[in-house]
Length: 577
Image 1: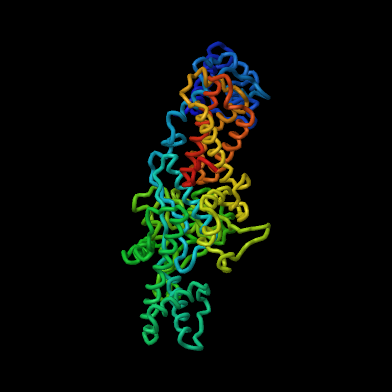
Image 2: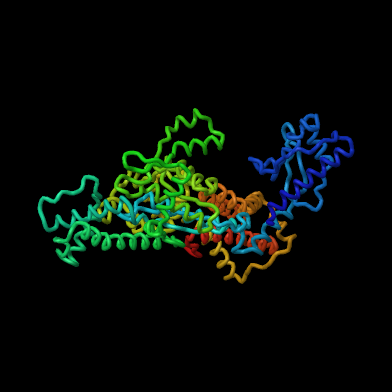
């Protein structure tokens, strides 16, 4: 257990013992001790940790909180703990202040754990599937995919650091209606090369990539498909173009430093019978009906039961205007929703205990019906989670940018990675929570100064490396300090920095619990800020050798923490800039 959590445990135990002693002495009446919290005050000037034990005990002990606080303070024993004193504040809060042993112990944690500092066993090895990006393979990936890629990959990294067993997956929709539309679009563009008057499908894909695929096929194989029947022609064109699109996706993801554990193809579900099995299961449960030649799923009934079970009122449910969904179309083909149910059922069947999907905010209405479907087929709906991601706009010079300077076309993920450093993109997309709209500033993303958040953090690491190199030239090398030497770090800037370092593991756990990797980019940015503040206020190279070594230890500890975050997010950690 790391120092901060040890300190909290020590304090909780000491407060309980003080209350028991107060009861025994008659300062408090005999009563069951109510639950209370140990927390960090909003303003650290008021103490390092605080408790509301006196406030929560007012009813049980039938006395004013301030008198309970006085009894606790009079009877508390802080010997052998990381605390040196306590003070009563306001109506009965008790604030506690760390002794120098706390600060030296935090530094020892980092020294000993090194690259493992910040890790915990909080997740107990629980298998978690993080599915993200999963872009339609019928066209290029866009800016939403860029944001989703960075969020999903870094979320999986946070989960791993917090003791879960994360698994990254990309779901390839290589079957269904969108592939038929892709085929019809390719066929029309191919025929237009050789014939006049060929109409393009009204709902076809209009992107230049469709024309480029058709032209590339014609350049390579000529008019061999001209006299083939439509089915054969479409199959040949899809077989030619789709693998190229998927290969481009895989190449872009690799360039983006995202390595999936599996690229799962929807076609596998159809071929294995898993999609049909889902329909059969729902039918057996009485949750389907036929209407106008199609098979429908009783989504409204299922979701209503689930929401009522969660404590929602009927008025709330009525406002959602829930509707039933088609599972099998009139033409006998399953819908995307049907395949999606089968896919998520497959995830649970593969042994994943928790499922996390990163979706665009436009899929908001799909969340409840998927939860309902999971419940309906016997999967644990409570372990299915969705991170909804808002839109991202590219801006430059204060203006929205829609076209790539290089291609003159709509900006794709590949274009972004050609124009912006990958590290910068990964970090910047994780500076805003998924549920907020984001302006991605291209000008800041390419800057190599403190306006660029990733540069700012990388510079702090490089600055520490520079300090170490400069001292090495003078024959000064870091050594292990004694606890008394580390106790020399008493300046406010030093202690504020160490306090922040102590929070690292808990910040990772918090980010994992909330599915929010942006907490860690904020944490490491603040780490860099506090380091620069310390460095500007406290000279490292001083005549007092013990103090110099203590400050060198602090520098090395910060270096380790920054590197641990950047390594976790697959971002370069330079030693010079």
